[in-house]
Length: 256
Image (cartoon, rainbow, N blue to C red; front, side, top):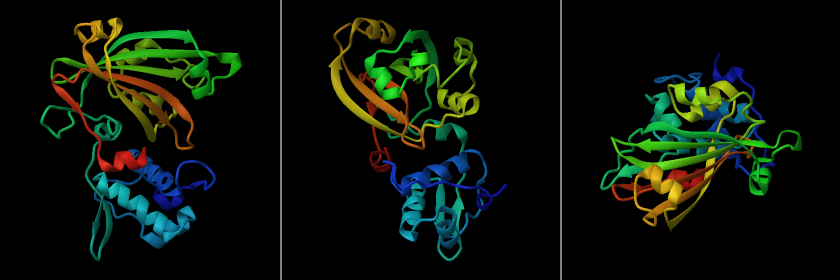
């Protein structure tokens, strides 16, 4: 199947800008190998017709993927798909590096706990929890690289959105949790928003990070959105910055 065989619905009435919707659709095609490394993508006129948008909107979407290193424009030849790997896709929202480095290492992830709870008021509102199934999953992961635990991720998702999710799936997965979301539940997180605050670590997190309670850390609260601007994940990252830094590139700030 080629890109031009697919049907896309770019909605001008939702919060997500149309260029970002197109970028997300093309990103999905890259991830699913509809567009393969080395392949020439359709020209701008074809993409304008395919997505029913202006040429400026198409150029902005293509430009974003170029900045991410996923597409490359060659003068006089067109735009080609760069070499890439699934892991780099699924860690595109991971912004932690070792002090003094710009390299984003893929962390080792260990499940610390998995619980089913009744959704509180905030979770109900943000995740649009239905009354008939007001349960959420609370997932705590330890992230380490190369050997030390530097971050704890608390993930909250709606049980109704991820039916039949089990602790075994989380323990035995061979890729990122986003890969699990995509392959098992057809849920794609395409963009995020974040609030970052310096705070003092509380007891539960200090024990997971193996640091003293009251140690300064970064707390990053993230909302993960689907294509259609639906919030599908609440994530809080607790980062011990003794050996690592938090970094964002320009595209992330624009796209999320």
